[in-house]
Image (cartoon, rainbow, N blue to C red; front, top):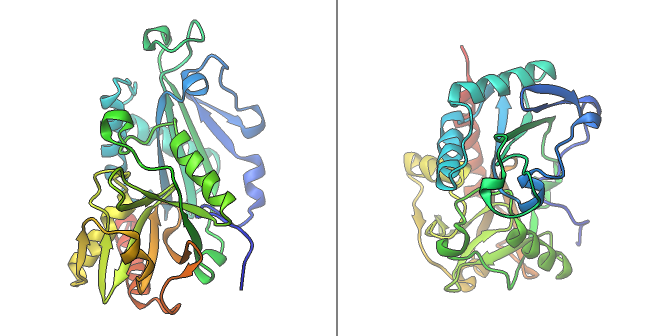
Length: 307
């Protein structure tokens, strides 16, 4: 039966989020008062990097892996973070404490090149240092993401070559993905399945993509998609548990005929795919996905256990 449209980031309503405090360059302010300049390079150009992280049991899951990606991305675009890892962790800790947050928290850590002296492109016009913003919310995925799954549509918009805008950069400039999402929505789906420049199945506009065929787990080569932390953890737990897992090229033919398919991301962990281009994926039974979800949940618990 058709269901209402939803996204991989749909969260259960939590009234506590109405009064959260947001970190802006060392200050903690009520969300209604959280502002950045219209001259900020993030607003003007999408010139910045971000990370999405989750807090469980008072600990940021896979913090080191997220910081590896964040600092590498910033270095690639010559963006001075202005803090070391300990400084970033301190800012996160302050923000969580100010909000009384310890568990089932989602964070968006954002760094831009800062305020410009003129509203033009050149990076040298950002002269006052970077802008660091941290938004944290009490956030749990809605149950329907697991029970109903996500409907995908393959779209014309592709993930490009590293020589245009490397997909491994978690940039504020997400227009490529936004266009893909709009195309999927206009096709009557929840989110977009994007191909790589060679026509192979790659990723969605928001998450990494996996299929299960005859007990094997397949995902793209990783050449044209975000180097997702959750993606890598799924590959790791499959290998550790003896589930065959392959990073390889495959086409829509293999995706349509998969027994199972799921998405990975920091927010939703593993989200089942119900259909692609209106074609139901498998029989609706998802034993391999369920096993991976158990393994991943245990890995998160082990990573965030502070005993």
